[in-house]
Image 1 (tube, rainbow, N blue to C red):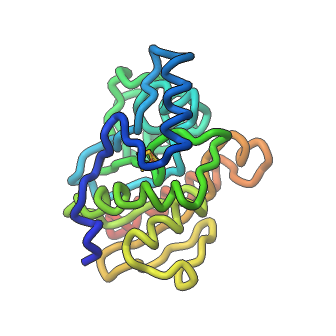
Image 2 (cartoon, rainbow, N blue to C red):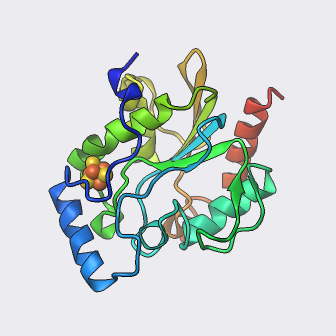
Length: 218
Ligand code: SF4
């Protein structure tokens, strides 16, 4: 097994492995002292069979609220779809105290700190990969991962010791990453992708429905 799969899942609040991201965090703590402004932890139970991997916290979304995908447009689409397909329960109100619970599902990010302009560098993605690998390794019942976008896809493949060339990202694709673990791909559910028509709510729902059927053996 990849040794990173057994490491620490959550970075400390002041992790400074990425100097640029730590400096950006310090600026945000100064200007917005009431925001989360720290690495955003994974959300959901370790015993879930589904893991959703996003790119990184949005500045005014997860970086503000402290829960993945909470407080920005991407969260509206993601949580709305999860609720519709029974992978979440309760209601989503864009706040960490809205009572929403994930059902057999967990959400994490390939990069735990908000990057300027939503663009982490390749080095930053690599720096944060051990936390992604450990998160995957900490889930004993994991059956399917949904990667939101190419960066999340590639980092997941590498975290599991695979070659990117053997598993190219493609919206709607399913990859047998290991004998026990399938990787599904979707374009990221960002406002940019939906505004430009790269991803529609129907396309996103179709991928999650396929994943749901796979996990349930249907
Ligand atoms: S992105 Fe990850 S590795 Fe880099 S500073 Fe944040 S928590 Fe640490």
